[in-house]
Amino acid sequence: MGLEKGDDAGVYRISDDVALIQTLDFFTPIVNDPFVFGQIAAANALSDVYAMGGRALCAMNIVCFPVKKMDISILQDVLRGGLDRITEADATLAGGHSIEDDEIKYGLSVTGIVHPDRVITNRGTRRGDALIITKRIGTGIVGTAIKAGDADAEAEEEIIESMIVLNRAPAEAMARFDVHACTDVTGFGLLGHASEMIEDTDVGMRIFSSEIPLFSGVLDHFSNGLAPGGLFRNRDFRKHMIDCDSSVPDDVYHLMFDPQTSGGLLIACSKDDADNLVQEIRKRGAASAAIIGEVIQSPAGRILIE
Ligand code: CO
Ligand code: CO
Ligand code: CO
Image (tube, rainbow, N blue to C red; front, top):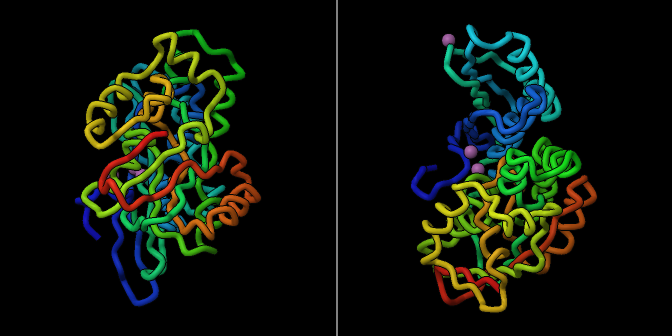
């Protein structure tokens, strides 16, 4: 499978029954606790395997570390956090590579498998599908508020708890249904990744903005001017595809572009299956899973926000 439509991972068929899923992701710390940073980076990297409908087999550490400036125990904590999530995924740590760098960076290269007939790409939405999201939105805005000293420990705990959770449970729930398309919500924000699902297709989307699950305080933080720069870049990149009803508050429109770290899955399946799939996902622990929109015939290639 190619890379042109921004899918989550590369998929390579090696037999009639098995296709390999390959992906990698790494970034600089977004929290101070090195163990938690390792957990988040690993959950984020593993997520692209789940977004393709697969399961993770092996992972390799990718490490940049300022070994002359920083205590090596910090790196050990990062790697422990990563291993904790790899273990939670029932995957195997198969090695890795580290280099000296000015700033810590950590992530994983992950290999997964999927049956070639069960690959779920981000390009399969059909008219009448329901859109499901499995985690709350707002990690970028809340993270910015934390850095500015404007969010309390409870708010930090809330986004951390969400970011370290694997998307394994919703992926396993998806395997029991006929899911048409899936991607994970990460750096481009909810509307950025939703746009990728319908760009240059013959369908469009309607998003019910009041149904989107949010972290507490997100709207307040945004109103206080606390938002990552990426949010506005995401908006400017995709706004030509989006029609926002005048009844939708401006801050609600904007937080749909908030870049997410280790965000949830965005899933399209038939409306008949949607309630049961949401129940199945919630039963497996993703309590915030919700139906947030639908796939419509026209206008094709556009997203209506209501
Ligand atoms: Co992805
Ligand atoms: Co990725
Ligand atoms: Co090497």
